[in-house]
Length: 582
Ligand SMILES: Cc1cc2nc3c(=O)[nH]c(=O)nc-3n(C[C@H](O)[C@H](O)[C@H](O)COP(=O)(O)OP(=O)(O)OC[C@H]3O[C@@H](n4cnc5c(N)ncnc54)[C@H](O)[C@@H]3O)c2cc1C
Ligand code: SF4
Image (cartoon, rainbow, N blue to C red):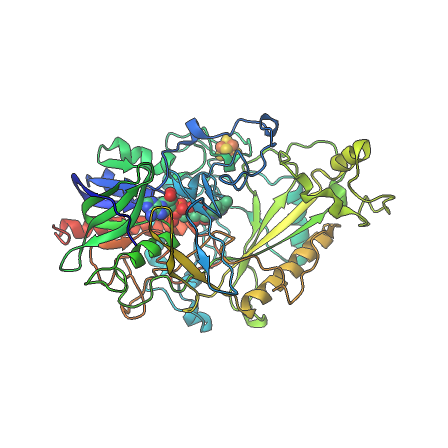
């Protein structure tokens, strides 16, 4: 159902129209605009720059809520993301009996202002899962196709890390990593005892001045947006130089409804709703690139129905929205007595882990086929609202310096303060992040009964995990407990039951949704070709995580950017050959 509003045709015609300004859209805009292509970016949210809009230098006590979450800032009042799991007037629905959480950013730069900056390359095996273990499908491209683009992205945005010589965890162009913090040294020691590798993490944060941006000064508040631009966000690293080229226009508050096509079925531009005035506009372009994030791009394609594309644009395969998957996630926290009641230590550092645990086992001996990594957290960061996750949880646990505690944690007054001081900095945790196998039946599709406040039909989700993912979570819990135990600590997260899927988090909640417009060699079973170009519509491309044929357990954003750059290069090459002349 469309709103009954006039369509206003913009007089500008662009070479390329990009939908979305996050990691993928920002990268395509930069590469194209700097090459002389006339580009327009349509962004559903407002303009937002870290140095002017961010809250990096505030203390929690500057807020009456001590930085606690508010509906539009789910990760805390000072978090640098306008958006969240639920957006007022923009619902999504579920197939009965299923769950999916969908985190949407609504601002210039999308979710790249507050993301964790964990930037892991996919390895050679990650592009050929089916050949290796028979599950899912191989990508139509290999590591060798993407590796030069990983190099270019890493050199551009600046990342720290180390090359460790692990075959499926290839290293890249790195700045030196920061030193491990105190609790991270304990994790390394435990890892050595258990033969589990603990290596420097790989984050897109500058430990040295890089490409005109200053080095990180270790305030540890990356999630609030970095006022000095010492970490990566799309506006600071991609869109600003693209704007300087004079070839980029950005239209904020522009919620794209659909891709417009002509009688030949080719894309001619997009229509969008101005979210402030609710007027409807059209933008004309020779090429359309969808980079609205995996599910939003699928939604736009499915809503773009015409006589040439009755099933949605680029959806002759009926695969748009299918193979949706998220990273498998579950976490374990523990208290380590040697860290309790200690004197304040200098735990300065970046806003994220300084070490992590890459996948280290051979799956032939396990009851799940794909790998996971462990992200490490803990220490003495600035306490947020609800610090300690509820100190009453420590009641009755016999880990206080090896002594039987006379009372439980919590209570009132001085003894509560003493407990907080005692436990502060003694928590160490591990978040397992594993690969979910992409399956045809896991999907999002248009809910024909529900529209959002702009009159645009919304997505319905139908995603389920299998035993394979549950078994992986069991292994994550057992491993994390062993690490905490080897550090002399006690896990405070209860061991989850089989019935609970071994503590697996709701699908979507790890915010690595991928696969809705997967690439492949066969137009009958995939949406895009190896250049992220629609099989059906040659001037339509997708540049977010939709094209991923499989997930890998590695966080998605570095690969989104590498593929987006590769796609932009292909658009340039094809444009020079006149492929998209309107
Ligand atoms: C708290 C958090 C931590 C994370 N940590 C990591 C991490 O450590 N490592 C990692 O790799 N990834 C991480 N991620 C995921 C990462 O943020 C995403 O992978 C990345 O931002 C995806 O980029 P994108 O360009 O596809 O989408 P986005 O960054 O979401 O950008 C999409 C943009 O499109 C706009 N848009 C959507 N629909 C429309 C429409 N119809 N019309 C116009 N515009 C539209 C949105 O407003 C948004 O600005 C994290 C995410 C969160 C929320
Ligand atoms: S820790 Fe470093 S990169 Fe992160 S916000 Fe602070 S200065 Fe910026």
